[in-house]
Image (tube, rainbow, N blue to C red; front, side, top):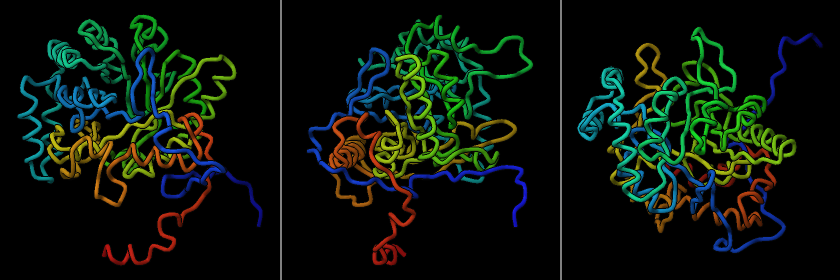
Length: 380
């Protein structure tokens, strides 16, 4: 029976529902180029450490930068609220699960201090690496100049959902083109998950866009608010906006798929869907010496009225080097992400990330279960 529809709904796909088709040619993995660039800064690999307190501190940002990557420190976190953030992080890790949300709400109610913003940025710069910091749109106009004066290299303006146009009761909110003109440093903005939102953000002059709403292991925005688009579809749609913008202007704006990653195949699929880089949190929170001490929590978790995160136990499984580069004896894809990326690119015949973006993808919900009966039963 035919009847008029109030809405047409399209199918969207996540990492576990798609597969990559091997290329007609193959390439040696060691001949692949996985470099990533933001403004004048070039990084050896395209995996960013997410701006979350359990993942990035000044010390871990320095360690990550020395390995060739970019870590983003959160200017709205405990690092800039407390003189001794390590004791706060220890307290969070030791608190029972039933009490941790109330504790986080209390701890994150302390004000962000300008002097600590400057000190933490200066500490990262003293470590000899590129300093990237993140703040919310509401705090950008105040904190960005302080961070720049202290030596910030890259600014990330980040919230659960970011658009080029925002309606509010305030007399004048953050105007991205004006902020970009004033800061005169590379700017990354996020998060978004649709063609139109991505295209409008690109028109503001940003250097890169974060893609993903609610996919992170410690984020509950999808459960609380019902919003989000699975990451493969979100990345592909924003990549279409990037190609439109590139064709119209000749200017390339990078896409960074942010969140939802568990294993190496997820990362490979994100690049095939159109990403230029990825941002990961919980896998890096598992590293020895990570600030979260075996735990990870969403940065919307401490919201005083509507928490949209949870603390998850991720454990401590390996060194940062093993998680990124290997070698590893783990067979489930949770370590040596860059080895997986290079190998996948080689099998798909992609010498560069840009070529990897054009890898053929298919809808394949059985990709992880077909023929894997023994593996699945032995996990029980």
